[in-house]
Image (cartoon, rainbow, N blue to C red; front, top):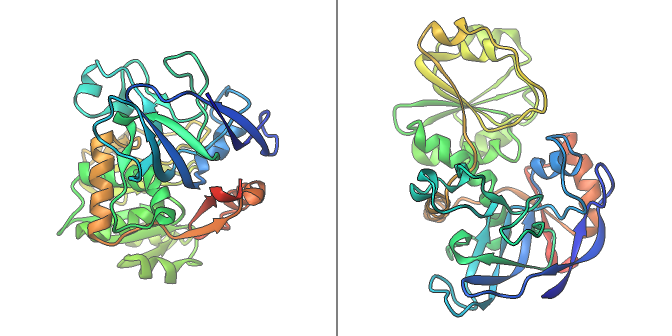
Length: 346
């Protein structure tokens, strides 16, 4: 066991505070990672505030982890000391179900083991990336290519793969019109990735406040959803819409923006249930779908793609002492576009 410093929420809705946690000893197939940077995802806030249901406290959030390997177990074959690596939203799964065997570990039938706010196979709670070190089985660790610096790579482990997976699955590419709803931590990566895939990209945002940013990031068009003319003008336009927002939308209105047999895919997760008129999908043979992160192999594919296209997150680097302030700013959409903790300040 190793004692490391971390920032934890002691109870639901309580401010995070500096503490210490125990990391397990390195087992045969484990990798010990010195965490260099940890992204702050909106889901960290949802879970620390129990917005998605009962949670485990004390909670050390953080599933956008970038660091360097400092020790490997005797059975490890994929990594060596000094390798630049990342850890995303899960640190284990059953490895036996059809989904795990197909590389879709995020949909493990028995439930994957989340990087934090979960219980590992050893029965111990998992603690995330707002800490100095983490121990993870090598099969749930990915390699960060040399072409991406670790600070801008950290958010790719959740925000990057969360957008890459549905964009690839629903065929974003040349000749396709793709809309990204929301230009935040997730949405800005959606714009970058969809543009790099060759799609014609539109941002749908509440206002035009971030229009200049959106166009610089690779959007071809930018519309304000608060303008009622937007929904009239863009009716029947898109092959694919990816919604990244965590507030409930008028899905009936957004579905009118799809072409026949188009898809509206949700990666944002509102805490409240939605209302839907099923004729919004029946008429036009449309799809309303969801997508959750990606498997380990696809996450590696995404990192390699981002390195090839020189993509990283747009970040604001903060000290660990600024985490609580950062949470408040995320909730008021005051970040462009991802807070990343310099874990040397923990």
